[in-house]
Length: 370
Image (cartoon, rainbow, N blue to C red; front, side, top):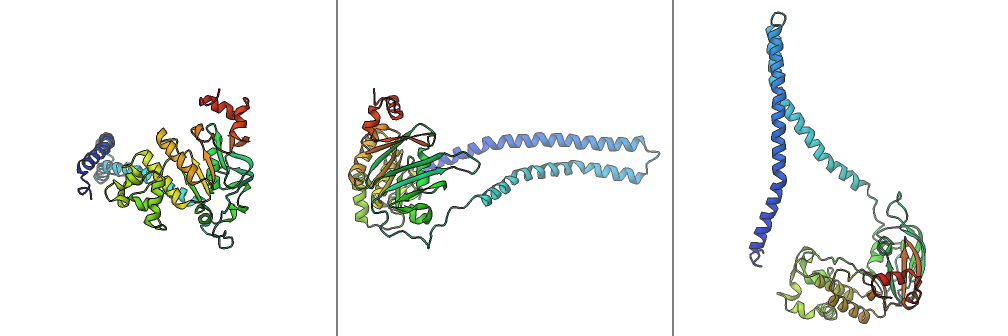
């Protein structure tokens, strides 16, 4: 496979680099072991010396059998010390594995994948209404709340931007929608269905997210776009065309069968994000979440993504966590979070007109308002 793609030189260099890095760590370990061995030999020799000295000084009172026994045991001290120190080191090293197994065993499990007692309609969500009711969440029981009593509603098909300074709770809100973190109190409704009652598969398969860091797997482009083989090639090509990737994919060796490396390292960041966009276009769910989807791409790719989203998801509910404020200025409404609470919720025009609003302050910092 490596020879077929003509990348022998790259893999050789990468292998040699990893071997060099391993040796950088290995040599100090060898030196430390040799240093310890010398010290243990010294301790063993001292014990032998004192055993022999004791036998000489007490030659008149100690029997020859006791002298032979003490010296023979003293000769084994060095070997025993080496074994004892090595075993102690091995126990300290391997106990980490025990700690990890214990940690994994105590990790709380997610909710059930399916809930046979509560299955949403096949076409759910139809309208894409989202409602939070006094929603609170924390990452662990012993930690403070990261979302503190959020209450708001989003109409079906509405475009809502979510902004706030670092640590305000923007990403936590996204995690809550997918139930990656569970509610400490309150409820989330999508089309009047409490998502806490749904199985995780029923919930997550009906929502779409385009994350900041695109997720690609080792395998063909088609597998990355349609991992469960739910769509025809024509549908895949149509999604690629809308994502402005069709001509690029056609020029690749093998087209849709082009091999993507782990994490998409053989593609640019912009191309990876456009592939995630094409994946979202294929699924076309009624609720779309953009978690700083364009934060890592150039302005040209940002414009392509925004243009496609406006055209292809115009009837969908879109929640956009914004890194670049210009991407949400055309939203219907904007939620401004601060310390896990909603401090402002209005149209961008109204918030910008209010010079004392937090959103206006953030816009000024970004150079979008005066």
